[in-house]
Image (cartoon, rainbow, N blue to C red; front, side, top):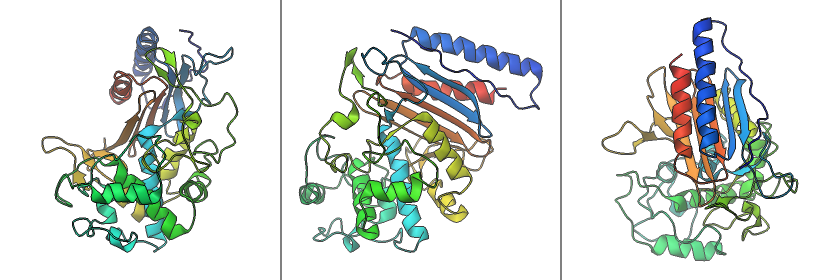
Amino acid sequence: MRIIYLLITFILLGSCKQQSVNTMKSDFIDYNKELTEKDFSGVILIARNDSIIFNKAYGIKNNQENGINDLNTVFDICSLTKQFTGAGIMKLSMQNKVSLNDSISKYFDAVPNDKKNITIHQLLTHSSGLIDIVGDDYDTITEEEFLNKVFSAKLISAIGKEHNYSNVGYSLLALIIEKVSGMDFENFLNLEIFKPSKMSHTGYVIPEWNNNEIANGFLNGTETKKPNEENWSEQGPYLNLKGNGGVLSRASDLLLWSKAIRDNLVLDKKSTSKYLYPHILEYSDGNSYYGYGWVIENNDLEDKLVWHNGGSETFASDMWIYPKKSITIIVLSNKSEEYVYSITNKLSNILLSK
């Protein structure tokens, strides 16, 4: 597999001792060799204090003549989409257009008795008790059909008691955004989140994608379709994916989003605190909590970490932010392989050990 080395830039804090600087450079170089040996395909970006310290593209985005991944390649970011849906709800809350304690029966008709008291907060934290999915990502489905399937399915846990990951819950949140704002979901995100964050290459169908800008996925070495070549409507994916996944973006845009969160460019300080708060324990024996589209760890420590990953059959994504240390690590790949999710942890260990 062809590898292209597009950019490696190390910008290090002046307070670092030269020995530590050299050691960190050496660690990055060694790990870079390991990624090349693994045939990693995608883009990695690391920034500290808003300065990029590592940014590199690997592998190919398709089998065309010039189909090499570069720093501007656009990927399906999969479940990283949820952080934008969560931010959209928080923006409406800031505008006093929704309350996080609102029940879904305020926004949807004919909600059955066992689900009518589910709140927006519980959708955001995956504590609604709703099932995960009701169909495949690219199935054609109307809003009526989607709601019938969601509301007729048996709850998998008592409302508000447990964290059970629910993609359909985030699709319901996308519908609530549309009903409250009077806008299509993507149009709302573009106006209220992407534009203020200067993210011009993030969305479903609004960006004017260049023909060879979006990566194709690869499954077992075989090239598959670009995400936006799948069965989408004119407004992007249908409701099995809308709001919970499928947004297309590039690493540099996600870095702008990290800055927008930390600098309160989209959400005010109070709303950001709620957005990144550890609302519910993910696992009874763990230290991971779920916020509003983010996993939260070490909330009260200097090493507070907010992160989320995502995956499909052909794409994998991972994004870690250490807000108190102003560190962001982004990994996007067009090959969905398990080791991809270990990259952020490895890079984090290199950074935090120096």
